[in-house]
Amino acid sequence: MTKLYNIKNLTRHNLREWMNKKAKTKTQVQAFRADQIFYWLYQQRVGSFAEMHNLGKGMRKLLEENFWISSLKKSEKLHSRDGSIKYRLLLEDGKNIESVFMPHTSHNTVCISSQVGCGMGCDFCMTGTMGLVRNLKTSEIIDQVLAVSEDLPAGKKLRNIVFMGMGEPFHNYQNLMQALEILTDEHGFNFSQRRITVSTSGLLPKIRRFGKENIKPNLAISLNGVTDEIRSRLMPVNNAYNLEQLMKVCREFPLESRRRITFEYILIRDLTDSIEDAKGLIRLLHGLKFKINLIPYNSDPRNKYQAPSQKQARKFQKYLLDHDVVAPLRISKGQDIHGACGQLVVTEKQRSQVGEKNKTIANVMEC
Ligand code: SAH
Ligand code: SF4
Image 1 (cartoon, rainbow, N blue to C red):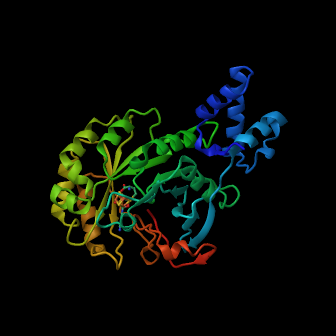
Image 2 (image 1 turned 135 degrees about the vertical axis):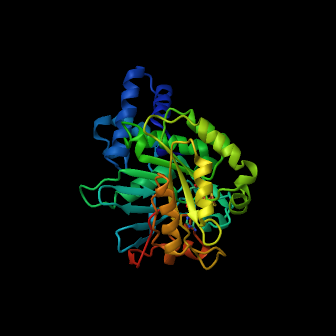
Image 3 (image 1 turned 60 degrees about the vertical axis):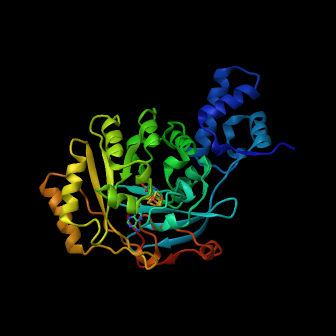
């Protein structure tokens, strides 16, 4: 018997190619079928080929003989008072990842993972302590969006997707790009490229490559330090690609009009939160089209770093605003459940807690 292949690992282009090879009829007819299948998978979101009514018996049988349709089981769901929800999602091999739903007054955002764990080893990040367990498949990336969407109340939709969950997206480049293709495909999810943000710790060769792609979501870079000394201490990637090299690549990054690079900057008490650092930040980014997301450090008893005082965080932000730098301060709310930015970590104990649902907790997070 043929081993079934998960159809969600195929872009529409891949599916069309497969159909052209398999079927003996004309190319245009098969291309049209791939459009229809995508419509059923990503717009109607059906779970079986039998539900794809307009496909014809022969085609449905061919699909059933060759493919299966995946979905992710929600192993845990944590609700916050502010409406955010953290999902722990069970993968086929028993591993778990986390995705976060974040409602805003005018729109809804989902924060998704690109890897199980992360191999970049940033010193402040709990996900980093897991090391890289494995890359997510294309299907596992897009199934996160489907799993979160299906819980939305009728009439509500996701507008934004941010790749700021577990993992370094550019370390899983090919699957990331395939997922972006399906997410932005007009016959697939049809998300606007402008509503998707990919965040990287700074893998320069991949940033360059990303700049040349046809699909152009927003780029965010985790900066977190304004000198090589501090940034290398926090993020080992800086030893491979230092700040001067990073800034050169950012200056050369092709940006369409009215688009900017987002720099994420964590405020860590007595390490990155001084006015000297704010001055350094302005100097470093001078000449770029950018905005800064200031993230007060989400402290964790398992880590040595401390959150800044609220007063210092405000002072830092004010300095930037006074110098005409756009710098929203992202107030994190989820330290108690280790769910805020960069805090997504799945321990062995948590992995075995499959089945716990709908816990109400004080806070989740806002990435
Ligand atoms: N790996 C990618 C995307 C996921 S991390 C990246 O590093 O860009 C998402 C964001 O969370 C990053 O900007 C990271 O700097 C931030 N982050 C990690 N740990 C954090 C913590 N403890 N407190 C606040 N932000 C944190
Ligand atoms: Fe990985 Fe990003 Fe965490 Fe660094 S901050 S360890 S790159 S998830």
